[in-house]
Length: 175
Image (cartoon, rainbow, N blue to C red; front, side, top):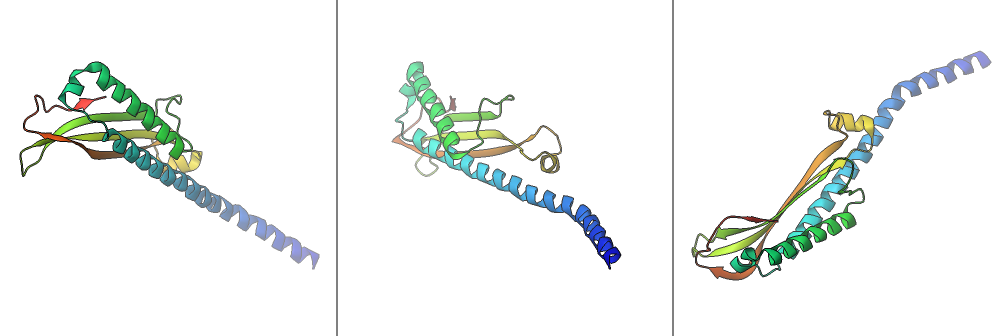
């Protein structure tokens, strides 16, 4: 009787040794994907809020011509974007060992096809290299082996300025 019991205990250990790695890989994979989805949602929300803030500035051609005013707006928006992302993404670290954070904030003129009038659009884009916290799962998700995956978000909001007939320059103005 005791000999039969020890064989069944050994069999359970072998079965556990076969099934455990697959089980833990699935559990940690679900955790890593949950962290990535949460970070993507935070990134999109932070970019949207910053674009909303950028659309509230009353910018026009004179603003673009005055470098101090435009650089002040850009500085404020850059600070706002980092604050939004820090609040909404727990793992956000813009100054990590490799530069992980690549923001683009710009204002561009667009033409209304119906009236021919021009209006401004605030465009905020961010590419963030989010770290992968589970090494083996990270190798499966991103086989390149740099330990991160690139998340992106962009948002455009119309600036509610009075329309212009024809701006002096229709080039985009980047921060």
